[in-house]
Length: 247
Image (cartoon, rainbow, N blue to C red):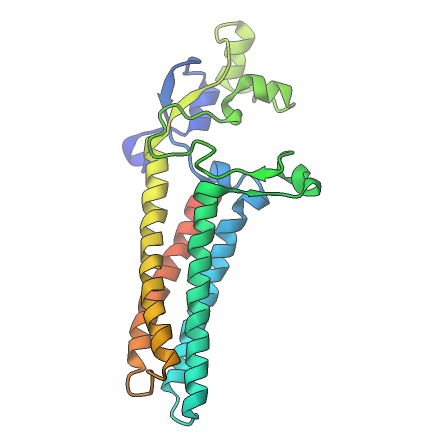
């Protein structure tokens, strides 16, 4: 997306020195800059990935037992219900962690703070200001005073460093208009989340039906059709996760 529109990354713009404190510049800020900043921040997305992969297995197991002809009816009912309910729980876990990641965040024990830049709280994307309408986004990575006080400093080969050394740039906090990058992230992951929600609604009906012995080898194909949809949801997330959470 940023290559199509010719939008440079915020890191590139910051190091170029082509900004003035107090004025917002248009640049591309990937969500991974926040999410992949620590192992704990990326945890919800990583857990969600495993949850969906496991849920694909559980829905296949539900189909397997619903299609079996040499099995007691009561045992079939229990197993199909168990695996569909497990799929439902994993799907709900996915959306729950997505809401935690977007809006809530979560605390860390004191002894783990050193692995999270000294913070005892994993901030949500909302509290970080990573929003669709973010026209004045600020991050400590784009603050020369913060970098200097925390021993990070600037790349000595960067244009910004040379400009500050020459006294032609005063440094400070860069503000960024990141609406393109944040919209790309939220629309993509949000659309996927809507499909997961659709799956939860379907699974709710299917689980209730299974609990009443509603699935037999004669109509097990309906679980197969749902399974194809669910595998697609799983596959899309496996593609989305590395693109938006790791790079």
